Image (tube, rainbow, N blue to C red; front, top):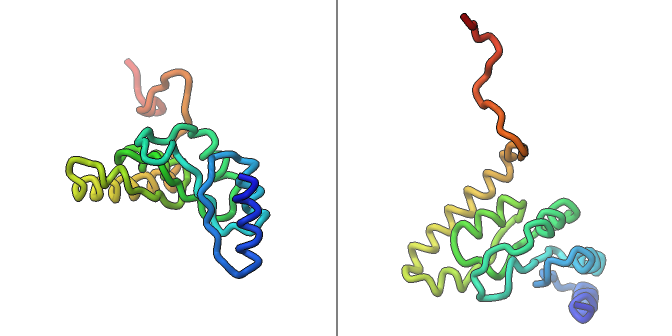
Length: 146
């Protein structure tokens, strides 16, 4: 990662737009931004693994701390993985293997498209708070009891 940070610094000085593929390490992301990266592209899981987002906490923290695009890359194996990445606040998801290795690649590509859109809308809509205990979802105010 130190070499990636240094390469980012050099390439930015030479006028390149740098979109570094990196781990989900928060300190490394900050250093890449300081070196001039135009986006951060953390892996969701090892490349080609299809394991989905393995560290949701770090992706969420990266979204909170970054003011550049956050593009999840690697490990996305199915549509629900893409939706989760977007619900965590990613600006985009790069994918290849999950589509290329699907039994029906065109159908999987369509599912990924729909999942990215749904995940982004869910992120923008804002999920309800998580609660430890159940609470009634129907209002009880104004209900007349006999």
